[in-house]
Length: 311
Image 1: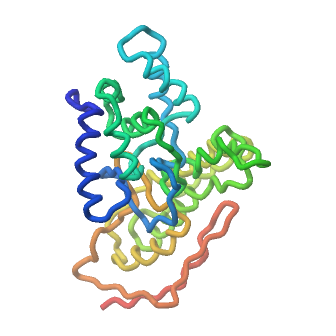
Image 2: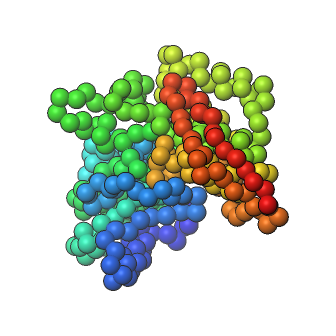
C-alpha cells in the first residue's frame, strides 16, 4: 500500500522477472508472499493465461470500480469496461499463488497502452487480474490454491458449471453435493490433531470443546458459516516447538496433506509450521508402518499407529 507504488511500474518489474525466468526454461510465473505456503506439489493447473485463487472473490475492489465508473473521471471508459468484467467474474481473486503464463503475459504487456496501465489498481495482487482482464487474457480460479480458512471451492466452476449441472451455490449458502466444501476444514482438523499428538500445541480444554460445538450446531441451517467458523477456531489455535520432537510433527503433517490444497494463503501468519528444525537434543524415529486416516461427517482422526524411539 505504498503511495509510490503503481501497477504500471510493478508490471514492468514483473516483465523483467518473467524474461529471466523464461531464459531458465520456465513457462509460468507465480506471485508469492511471506505468509503463503506450498504444502505439496500442484496436481494440475488450469490451461489459461492467469490462474488465480480458487475460493476467493475480492468484492471490495469491485465496489471501488463501480464508484469510479459512475463518475466522469479520467480513465472512465476503462473503468466501466472493468466494472462489467468484474461483475462477470463475481470479484477479483488474483492473490498469492496466482500464476501467469509467461508468453501471453509478455505479449499482452507489449501491446498495452501506458495510459491504461497507469489507471490500474495500485495494489500488487489485484493489479494482476486488472491487467489480465484489460488485455482480454483468459482467467480462471485454481482449486489447488486456497484461502485455507474459507470454504474449499473453485468459484469459476461454481459460476460456470458444465452443461446439465446446476451451479454450485456453496458460497451462497446452499452447497452443491458435488463440491466438497469441507475439505479445507478437514485439512485444518487433521493438522490440529497432529499438533496435539506431537505436543506442538495445547490439548483441547472443556471451554475449547464447547466453543467448537457451538460452531458445529449451526451447520444444520447455515452450513457455510458453520464450516467457516470451525476453520477459524482451528486456525487460531497456537502452534509451537513440538515437545515430542520434529519428526513426529513432520511425519504426522505429511499424512494430512492429501486433504490439503497445494498452495494456501493464511493472511498475516500461519499455524502450518510448528517447528522449523529438529530439536538438537532429541532425535525421534517413526515406525515405517505409521498410518494416518480421516473419516467424514464431523471428521475425526483415525488412531495413528506409531512408535517412537528416542535416542
